[in-house]
Image (cartoon, rainbow, N blue to C red; front, top):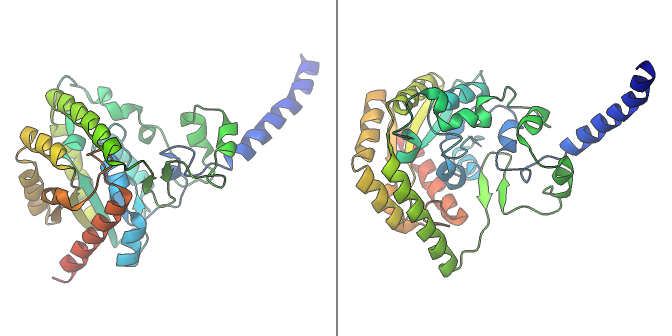
Length: 305
Protein backbone atom coordinates (compact mmCIF):
# COMPACT_ATOMS: atom_id res chain seq x y z
CA UNK A 1 0.00 0.00 0.00
CA UNK A 2 2.81 2.38 0.89
CA UNK A 3 4.51 1.75 -2.47
CA UNK A 4 1.21 2.35 -4.26
CA UNK A 5 0.75 5.68 -2.50
CA UNK A 6 4.29 6.73 -3.32
CA UNK A 7 3.61 6.00 -6.99
CA UNK A 8 0.18 7.64 -7.14
CA UNK A 9 1.02 10.88 -5.32
CA UNK A 10 3.04 12.40 -8.21
CA UNK A 11 0.15 11.71 -10.60
CA UNK A 12 -2.32 13.36 -8.21
CA UNK A 13 -0.07 16.37 -7.88
CA UNK A 14 0.25 16.59 -11.66
CA UNK A 15 -3.53 16.45 -12.11
CA UNK A 16 -3.99 19.12 -9.45
CA UNK A 17 -1.50 21.41 -11.20
CA UNK A 18 -3.15 20.90 -14.60
CA UNK A 19 -6.61 21.68 -13.20
CA UNK A 20 -5.29 24.73 -11.37
CA UNK A 21 -3.78 26.05 -14.61
CA UNK A 22 -6.92 25.32 -16.65
CA UNK A 23 -9.14 26.96 -14.02
CA UNK A 24 -7.05 30.11 -14.13
CA UNK A 25 -8.39 30.74 -17.67
CA UNK A 26 -12.03 30.92 -16.54
CA UNK A 27 -13.67 34.14 -17.73
CA UNK A 28 -16.87 35.57 -19.13
CA UNK A 29 -17.06 32.79 -21.70
CA UNK A 30 -16.98 30.00 -19.11
CA UNK A 31 -20.71 30.18 -18.44
CA UNK A 32 -23.39 32.78 -17.73
CA UNK A 33 -22.66 32.91 -13.98
CA UNK A 34 -18.95 32.45 -13.29
CA UNK A 35 -17.90 36.11 -13.27
CA UNK A 36 -20.49 36.90 -10.59
CA UNK A 37 -18.19 34.99 -8.23
CA UNK A 38 -14.81 36.13 -9.51
CA UNK A 39 -14.61 39.91 -8.99
CA UNK A 40 -14.11 42.19 -6.02
CA UNK A 41 -17.13 42.93 -3.87
CA UNK A 42 -19.07 45.93 -5.23
CA UNK A 43 -20.59 48.92 -3.46
CA UNK A 44 -23.15 49.68 -6.19
CA UNK A 45 -25.27 46.81 -7.39
CA UNK A 46 -28.06 45.81 -9.79
CA UNK A 47 -30.44 43.01 -8.83
CA UNK A 48 -33.02 41.06 -10.80
CA UNK A 49 -33.48 38.22 -13.26
CA UNK A 50 -32.39 37.79 -16.88
CA UNK A 51 -34.21 40.93 -17.97
CA UNK A 52 -32.01 42.83 -15.55
CA UNK A 53 -28.85 40.93 -16.43
CA UNK A 54 -29.19 41.85 -20.11
CA UNK A 55 -31.17 45.07 -19.82
CA UNK A 56 -29.04 47.12 -17.41
CA UNK A 57 -25.51 47.87 -18.63
CA UNK A 58 -23.11 48.51 -15.77
CA UNK A 59 -20.67 50.41 -17.97
CA UNK A 60 -23.32 52.93 -19.01
CA UNK A 61 -24.22 53.56 -15.38
CA UNK A 62 -20.55 54.08 -14.61
CA UNK A 63 -20.13 56.64 -17.37
CA UNK A 64 -23.26 58.55 -16.31
CA UNK A 65 -22.93 58.31 -12.52
CA UNK A 66 -19.11 58.25 -12.24
CA UNK A 67 -18.90 55.14 -10.10
CA UNK A 68 -18.47 51.40 -10.67
CA UNK A 69 -21.49 49.12 -10.78
CA UNK A 70 -21.90 45.37 -10.60
CA UNK A 71 -24.88 43.64 -12.21
CA UNK A 72 -25.74 40.78 -9.88
CA UNK A 73 -28.83 39.64 -11.81
CA UNK A 74 -28.92 36.00 -12.93
CA UNK A 75 -32.23 34.60 -14.14
CA UNK A 76 -35.78 33.87 -13.04
CA UNK A 77 -34.92 30.40 -11.73
CA UNK A 78 -31.65 31.21 -9.95
CA UNK A 79 -32.23 34.76 -8.69
CA UNK A 80 -35.89 35.49 -8.03
CA UNK A 81 -36.41 37.64 -4.96
CA UNK A 82 -36.30 35.44 -1.88
CA UNK A 83 -34.18 34.41 1.08
CA UNK A 84 -31.57 32.67 -1.10
CA UNK A 85 -31.00 35.85 -3.10
CA UNK A 86 -30.96 37.93 0.08
CA UNK A 87 -28.32 35.69 1.63
CA UNK A 88 -26.21 35.86 -1.54
CA UNK A 89 -26.52 39.66 -1.68
CA UNK A 90 -25.10 39.98 1.83
CA UNK A 91 -22.13 37.86 0.81
CA UNK A 92 -21.66 39.69 -2.48
CA UNK A 93 -21.87 43.31 -1.32
CA UNK A 94 -18.82 45.06 0.08
CA UNK A 95 -19.49 45.17 3.85
CA UNK A 96 -17.95 48.68 4.02
CA UNK A 97 -20.63 50.10 1.71
CA UNK A 98 -22.15 53.34 3.03
CA UNK A 99 -23.29 55.42 0.05
CA UNK A 100 -24.14 52.78 -2.52
CA UNK A 101 -26.62 52.95 -5.38
CA UNK A 102 -28.88 49.92 -5.64
CA UNK A 103 -31.13 49.21 -8.63
CA UNK A 104 -33.71 46.48 -8.06
CA UNK A 105 -35.22 45.43 -11.38
CA UNK A 106 -38.66 43.88 -11.09
CA UNK A 107 -41.11 41.89 -13.16
CA UNK A 108 -44.17 40.03 -11.90
CA UNK A 109 -42.40 36.76 -12.53
CA UNK A 110 -39.43 37.25 -10.20
CA UNK A 111 -41.86 37.94 -7.37
CA UNK A 112 -44.12 35.00 -8.18
CA UNK A 113 -44.14 31.32 -7.35
CA UNK A 114 -45.84 28.20 -8.65
CA UNK A 115 -49.02 27.88 -6.63
CA UNK A 116 -48.30 24.21 -5.95
CA UNK A 117 -45.10 25.01 -4.03
CA UNK A 118 -45.79 25.37 -0.31
CA UNK A 119 -42.39 24.99 1.39
CA UNK A 120 -39.31 27.17 0.90
CA UNK A 121 -37.12 24.08 0.56
CA UNK A 122 -38.97 23.44 -2.71
CA UNK A 123 -38.36 26.90 -4.18
CA UNK A 124 -36.49 26.60 -7.52
CA UNK A 125 -33.57 28.77 -6.33
CA UNK A 126 -32.68 26.16 -3.73
CA UNK A 127 -30.63 24.62 -6.56
CA UNK A 128 -29.04 27.94 -7.56
CA UNK A 129 -25.30 28.46 -7.12
CA UNK A 130 -26.33 31.42 -4.97
CA UNK A 131 -27.48 28.92 -2.37
CA UNK A 132 -24.21 27.05 -1.84
CA UNK A 133 -21.42 29.46 -2.75
CA UNK A 134 -19.32 30.95 0.02
CA UNK A 135 -16.71 32.91 -1.94
CA UNK A 136 -17.89 35.71 -4.25
CA UNK A 137 -14.61 37.52 -4.84
CA UNK A 138 -12.06 34.88 -5.83
CA UNK A 139 -10.28 34.84 -9.17
CA UNK A 140 -9.89 32.12 -10.19
CA UNK A 141 -12.85 30.85 -8.19
CA UNK A 142 -12.16 27.14 -7.88
CA UNK A 143 -15.07 26.71 -5.49
CA UNK A 144 -17.49 27.68 -8.26
CA UNK A 145 -15.76 25.56 -10.88
CA UNK A 146 -15.74 22.48 -8.65
CA UNK A 147 -19.38 22.88 -7.65
CA UNK A 148 -21.01 24.22 -10.79
CA UNK A 149 -18.89 23.66 -13.89
CA UNK A 150 -19.86 20.23 -15.20
CA UNK A 151 -17.92 20.24 -18.48
CA UNK A 152 -14.30 19.26 -19.07
CA UNK A 153 -11.96 21.90 -17.68
CA UNK A 154 -10.05 21.78 -20.96
CA UNK A 155 -13.10 23.58 -22.42
CA UNK A 156 -12.35 26.52 -20.12
CA UNK A 157 -9.00 26.97 -21.86
CA UNK A 158 -10.15 26.17 -25.39
CA UNK A 159 -13.23 28.42 -25.23
CA UNK A 160 -11.70 31.36 -23.37
CA UNK A 161 -12.67 34.87 -24.44
CA UNK A 162 -9.15 35.58 -25.65
CA UNK A 163 -9.81 33.14 -28.51
CA UNK A 164 -13.32 34.37 -29.33
CA UNK A 165 -16.17 35.80 -27.29
CA UNK A 166 -19.22 33.59 -26.96
CA UNK A 167 -22.67 34.75 -27.99
CA UNK A 168 -23.48 35.14 -24.30
CA UNK A 169 -20.55 36.92 -22.68
CA UNK A 170 -20.63 37.85 -19.00
CA UNK A 171 -18.57 40.99 -18.49
CA UNK A 172 -16.48 41.54 -15.37
CA UNK A 173 -19.08 44.08 -14.23
CA UNK A 174 -21.87 41.50 -14.45
CA UNK A 175 -23.59 42.65 -17.65
CA UNK A 176 -24.60 39.68 -19.80
CA UNK A 177 -24.02 40.73 -23.40
CA UNK A 178 -26.05 38.63 -25.82
CA UNK A 179 -25.12 38.66 -29.49
CA UNK A 180 -27.86 37.10 -31.60
CA UNK A 181 -29.38 37.19 -35.07
CA UNK A 182 -31.74 40.18 -35.15
CA UNK A 183 -33.28 39.32 -38.51
CA UNK A 184 -36.97 40.20 -38.33
CA UNK A 185 -38.16 36.64 -38.95
CA UNK A 186 -35.78 35.19 -36.35
CA UNK A 187 -36.91 37.69 -33.74
CA UNK A 188 -40.57 36.98 -34.54
CA UNK A 189 -40.04 33.22 -34.16
CA UNK A 190 -38.29 33.62 -30.81
CA UNK A 191 -40.99 36.01 -29.64
CA UNK A 192 -43.79 33.58 -30.51
CA UNK A 193 -42.02 30.87 -28.53
CA UNK A 194 -41.54 33.19 -25.56
CA UNK A 195 -45.21 34.18 -25.66
CA UNK A 196 -46.22 30.52 -25.40
CA UNK A 197 -43.83 30.04 -22.49
CA UNK A 198 -45.23 32.98 -20.56
CA UNK A 199 -48.85 32.07 -21.23
CA UNK A 200 -48.09 28.65 -19.73
CA UNK A 201 -46.17 30.24 -16.85
CA UNK A 202 -49.03 32.61 -16.07
CA UNK A 203 -51.40 29.67 -15.66
CA UNK A 204 -49.36 28.20 -12.84
CA UNK A 205 -47.99 31.07 -10.75
CA UNK A 206 -49.21 33.77 -8.36
CA UNK A 207 -47.53 36.64 -6.56
CA UNK A 208 -45.72 35.13 -3.60
CA UNK A 209 -46.05 36.60 -0.08
CA UNK A 210 -42.68 35.00 0.76
CA UNK A 211 -41.00 36.70 -2.20
CA UNK A 212 -42.61 40.06 -1.45
CA UNK A 213 -41.50 39.75 2.17
CA UNK A 214 -37.91 39.02 1.10
CA UNK A 215 -38.07 41.88 -1.42
CA UNK A 216 -38.98 44.30 1.36
CA UNK A 217 -36.27 42.85 3.60
CA UNK A 218 -33.71 43.40 0.85
CA UNK A 219 -34.84 47.02 0.50
CA UNK A 220 -34.63 47.53 4.26
CA UNK A 221 -31.11 46.10 4.27
CA UNK A 222 -29.89 48.18 1.34
CA UNK A 223 -31.45 51.43 2.62
CA UNK A 224 -28.94 51.31 5.48
CA UNK A 225 -26.13 51.29 2.93
CA UNK A 226 -27.25 53.82 0.34
CA UNK A 227 -30.01 54.77 -2.11
CA UNK A 228 -32.45 52.18 -3.45
CA UNK A 229 -34.38 52.39 -6.72
CA UNK A 230 -36.99 49.96 -8.05
CA UNK A 231 -37.03 49.70 -11.86
CA UNK A 232 -39.57 47.91 -14.03
CA UNK A 233 -37.91 47.03 -17.32
CA UNK A 234 -40.15 47.09 -20.41
CA UNK A 235 -40.73 44.11 -22.62
CA UNK A 236 -42.41 43.79 -26.01
CA UNK A 237 -46.05 44.78 -26.50
CA UNK A 238 -47.21 41.18 -26.73
CA UNK A 239 -45.38 40.14 -23.54
CA UNK A 240 -46.60 43.29 -21.78
CA UNK A 241 -50.19 42.38 -22.64
CA UNK A 242 -49.68 38.90 -21.12
CA UNK A 243 -48.18 40.43 -17.98
CA UNK A 244 -50.86 43.06 -17.56
CA UNK A 245 -53.64 40.53 -18.08
CA UNK A 246 -52.21 38.31 -15.35
CA UNK A 247 -51.04 41.12 -13.05
CA UNK A 248 -53.03 44.31 -13.87
CA UNK A 249 -52.03 46.02 -10.62
CA UNK A 250 -48.33 45.09 -10.51
CA UNK A 251 -46.97 48.58 -11.17
CA UNK A 252 -49.29 50.02 -8.50
CA UNK A 253 -48.01 47.40 -6.05
CA UNK A 254 -44.43 48.44 -6.77
CA UNK A 255 -45.36 52.10 -6.44
CA UNK A 256 -46.98 51.39 -3.08
CA UNK A 257 -43.94 49.49 -1.83
CA UNK A 258 -41.67 52.34 -2.94
CA UNK A 259 -43.88 54.88 -1.18
CA UNK A 260 -43.90 52.92 2.08
CA UNK A 261 -40.13 52.42 1.90
CA UNK A 262 -39.52 56.08 0.96
CA UNK A 263 -37.64 55.13 -2.19
CA UNK A 264 -38.24 55.75 -5.91
CA UNK A 265 -39.94 53.51 -8.46
CA UNK A 266 -39.08 54.10 -12.13
CA UNK A 267 -41.65 52.39 -14.36
CA UNK A 268 -40.59 52.07 -18.00
CA UNK A 269 -43.07 49.29 -18.82
CA UNK A 270 -45.42 51.52 -20.82
CA UNK A 271 -42.61 52.59 -23.13
CA UNK A 272 -42.21 49.18 -24.76
CA UNK A 273 -42.29 50.59 -28.31
CA UNK A 274 -39.13 52.61 -27.63
CA UNK A 275 -36.89 49.54 -27.60
CA UNK A 276 -35.88 46.46 -29.56
CA UNK A 277 -36.04 42.94 -28.09
CA UNK A 278 -34.23 39.74 -28.97
CA UNK A 279 -37.20 37.52 -28.12
CA UNK A 280 -39.94 39.81 -26.84
CA UNK A 281 -38.74 39.29 -23.28
CA UNK A 282 -35.13 40.52 -23.27
CA UNK A 283 -33.79 43.78 -24.62
CA UNK A 284 -31.38 43.88 -27.52
CA UNK A 285 -28.05 45.16 -26.26
CA UNK A 286 -28.25 48.54 -28.02
CA UNK A 287 -31.66 49.16 -26.48
CA UNK A 288 -30.25 48.05 -23.13
CA UNK A 289 -27.73 50.88 -23.34
CA UNK A 290 -30.50 53.34 -24.16
CA UNK A 291 -32.66 52.18 -21.24
CA UNK A 292 -29.72 52.21 -18.84
CA UNK A 293 -28.91 55.80 -19.75
CA UNK A 294 -32.54 56.69 -18.99
CA UNK A 295 -32.34 54.93 -15.63
CA UNK A 296 -29.18 56.88 -14.81
CA UNK A 297 -30.82 60.15 -15.85
CA UNK A 298 -33.80 59.36 -13.61
CA UNK A 299 -31.44 58.80 -10.69
CA UNK A 300 -29.64 62.07 -11.39
CA UNK A 301 -32.92 64.00 -11.52
CA UNK A 302 -34.10 62.36 -8.29
CA UNK A 303 -30.83 63.30 -6.56
CA UNK A 304 -31.31 66.90 -7.58
CA UNK A 305 -34.70 67.19 -5.88
